[in-house]
Length: 222
Image 1 (spheres, rainbow, N blue to C red):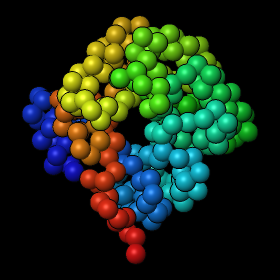
Image 2 (cartoon, rainbow, N blue to C red; image 1 turned 180 degrees about the horizontal axis):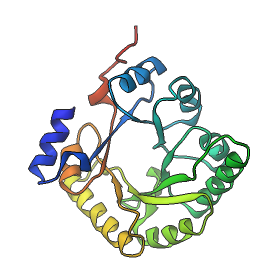
Image 3 (cartoon, helix red, strand yellow; image 1 turned 90 degrees about the horizontal axis):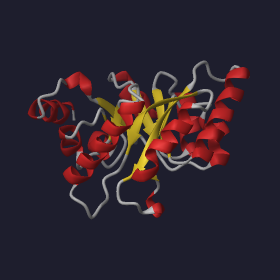
Image 4 (tube, helix red, strand yellow; image 1 turned 90 degrees about the vertical axis):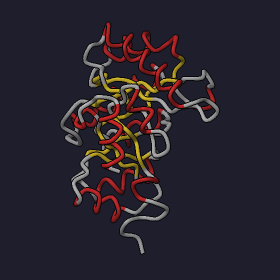
């Protein structure tokens, strides 16, 4: 995996340290997540709160990210383990996360504000999650006025029926426009096991890799 990322960065004329590897450990046991940390991978991700919470308790050495669709009623639970939520797609969810983060900090359950990314819908299909491109600017402005949240950038998944490079080029344009008003929101989370090279070509700063990293079964699973 390291070779693929390094080669993609070199082909794009980018430095290797511009792209973060996020290990997605969904459906794999905490023992696999712990092994990844032992191997030097700091950033891990989950897409379901009920699986992530216990796993994060068992593997406190990782920086955990929420990358899946998130309901507002899960906000209080998520902020107890997630350093970053990459799937914010509405003002109501941002508000819920802000309130939950504030409460968690007051209770001593977390030390820092919550980093968030706006999940962008590249095809406008509401069933797939994400905010429409036309609403990204308004949501970004809203997030910056929610206490306890830090806007870090954008995240997206390339639509299955679309050529990944085209989708990631569009996300790059969204990111560029966002940074005009929010220069610190420079993170672009894009690219998975099957399309990370195209994502890196178009400016991804974070690739979310599960299958290509862990394979069809966990590293430490019986």
